[in-house]
Structure formats: structure tokens, C-alpha cells
Length: 143
Image (cartoon, rainbow, N blue to C red; front, side):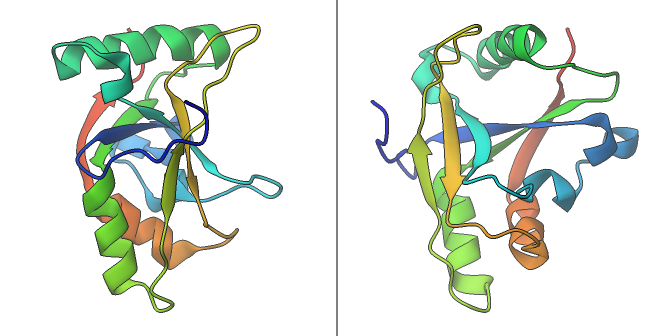
């Protein structure tokens, strides 16, 4: 449901453009807001209700290929919600409390697992570095 908080035990995935993952290595820039953005776009993996992470990633590849230009070298970074929130809360200078909320998109391309990381600020380099440190796995974003 829109606005529902994603449980700490669940996982999210972030699409990372090739420029954010040179040589397959995701950079902190992948976790920074662009001007005018309210939240950092992610996908809620458990919402997809598949039996394996690989199947969840395949579904994301399908969604991304329909709504984004998925360049060679684009990556998908997967992380645990609770681990990310705890790291940012305990290690950020302002003890930042991030919210991760379900924000499904429907329209030209449906993206029912779409979600957002809220309470970030533009140019939050330290927060982006902390989020990067919690990335558990990365996958190619291309089929």
C-alpha cells in the first residue's frame, strides 16, 4: 500500500547507471538525490513475492528495461532496509532517521514494487557513503 513503511527485515534494490558503477563497482553517487527529488527511487524486493533473489532481480530487469535506458555496465544494488537505517542512524553526524516507504507507480510502465528512501538531502555525500557500505549484493541490470 502506498506510504507503507517497508519492514527492517526486508530488502530493497537500487538501479545504478553505468556512470554510477564504473567497472561494475557501485559508487556512493548512486545513493544521492538529484535536485528536485523528494526521495531516492528503489524497489521493494519482498513485495514481488518470488521464491528466490534471482527471480526478483529478473523481474526488476524486466521493469527497468521497459522504463529506463539500461546501458552496458548498469547495476542493481541490493541492501537490507534495517541494516541501512541503523548504519545511517548511528554513524551520521545528525543521527539521520531514514524512512523507506512503498510508493508504487502505475501508468505507461507499471512498477508496483517501486519505493523510496526519504529524509535525504541533496549533496548528502556522507549518507550516500554509509548507504553504499550496506550494499550486500550487486547484479547486472541488463538481461
